[in-house]
Image (cartoon, rainbow over all chains, first blue to last red; front, side, top):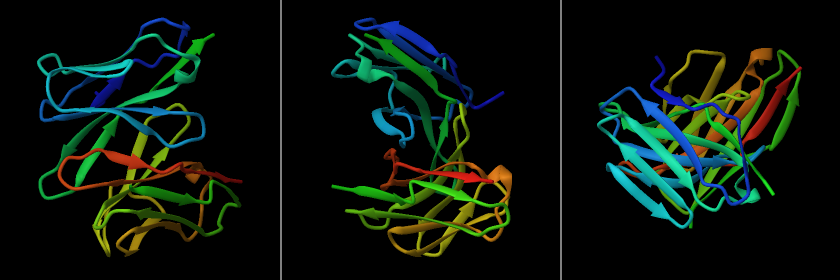
Length: 114
Length: 112
C-alpha cells in the first residue's frame, strides 16, 4: 500500500464548476498537509498548507483535512481555465534525527473547459 | 523574498556521458535542500536531501550523487548516465521546523 493515494483523474469540468480533489494516507503520524499546483513543464507551486483537522480557506481554494479518516481534499470554487494543471497532495513528516520529507500523491490532472 | 534557481531547463545527453545539474537558493540561509525526480504521470521521488554544507543523505541507491559545496548551492551529478535517468529533476528548499518545501522550475533531462 502506498503511503499516499491520490485519485488519478484526469478530471475535466466546465468553467465555474466546483472541483473536488482527494487523497488518502496510511500513516497516522503524518501531521502536515499540503497541496501543490503544477503547470506543464514547471515546478510544483505551493497552494495550501495546513496541519489541523478541519477546513482552511484561501480565496477560491479550500483545503480539508480529516485525520480520523486519514483523508484530505482540495476544493476549487468557480473554477477557471487558468486552474487547468496537475494538483499534487503532499504530506510532510520528519523521521527521527533527519530533515523533514514530503511524500507526494501521484497527482490529478485537471482541465477546466471555457 | 526567497527564490530558487535551477539550470539548465532542458538537457539532452547521450548514454554514458556525465551530468551536472545546479540549484541555488537566494534570500535565506542554512536551508534544507532536496533533489526530486518526477517520472511522467507519477509523483515525485526523493533522491537526496541536505541539512547543511557537505551533509548529503541518499534515499534511492543509483548512479546519481549530490553535493553541497556552499550553503545555498546543491548539485546533482552522474559520472555515466543511463537511459533510465531520463526524467524531470526538481530542486527544492525548506526553512526550519515543519515549513513546506518550495520548488524550482526543474530540468527536463533526456538521455539518448
